[in-house]
View 1 (cartoon, rainbow, N blue to C red):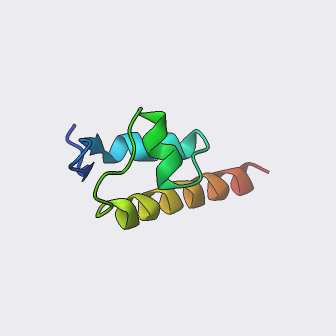
View 2: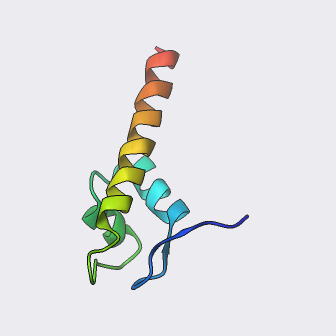
Length: 67
């Protein structure tokens, strides 16, 4: 499977950001820390935030359906 690179500076992939979000990372900084990185140029932060928001919304939706 191929995943999009979110952060070129750190070579962080979309699946890594999504996994961090599903494990509780509330923001890009926390997601980057989960893969032992930190933002460099910052160009990726809006997209990383979007991925985290999508993943968290999906988790909330799944939890509400299970309840």
